[in-house]
Length: 105
Image (tube, rainbow, N blue to C red; front, side):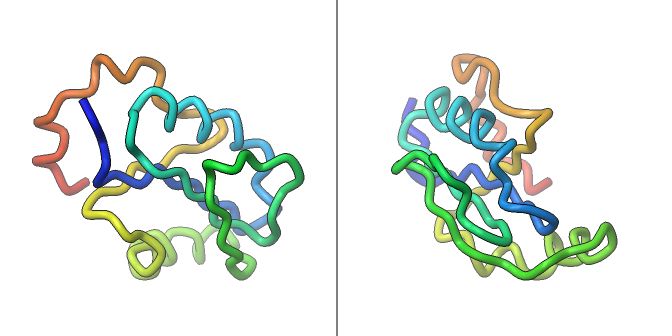
């Protein structure tokens, strides 16, 4: 199954997001065709070439929530986005069902 219309994204408004690189990399590998995107204060060293970086401004706890609801869509160029963090990522892409694309949250 190809996931050409899916962006796997992580948002880090308090540092460079280096801790999420393994989660992004694993998720992109498990969902072939998906795009990796890291939104953070600065590009972390050793970011793999298949993960795009875009700089954002500093976010506190409340600003993060507002950013996810009202600004994230400005950075996504696909119809779907899957948010991962350094403690949550795609473990086995074979378990991904096409029906998941029917849900908006």
